[in-house]
Length: 123
Image 1 (spheres, rainbow, N blue to C red):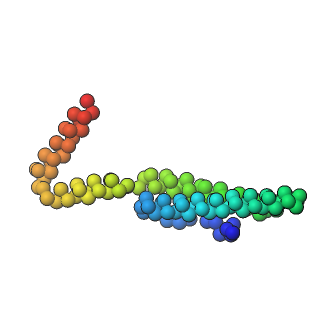
Image 2 (image 1 turned 180 degrees about the vertical axis):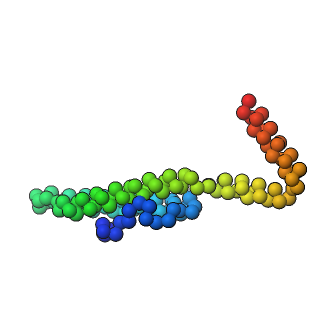
Image 3 (image 1 turned 45 degrees about the vertical axis):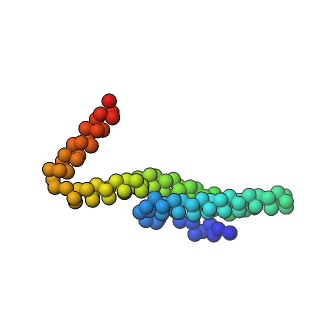
């Protein structure tokens, strides 16, 4: 059972440094949201069985915790989209290696050839 008093509000932790870390944290949040939904459903089934009412304070805490988690999930998705992916990191690494192996004039020719190829493909 999730302790609803320990759900941290969005932005209380450091932003992820990699997409993998963001995906891991999103998965943990998804699990916590699912657990809260399960608790709410179980409490509702018990309420129906005893023909009583849900504890309104508990229900409010559960829904608030879920809202905080959903807000944090949305924030993590936005932060993950802004992080460089594996392909961008590979391109940056290739550029760094090639730039180190060529002098300024050769590098300028390589960049100009790449720009011309892009311009030709755009037509």
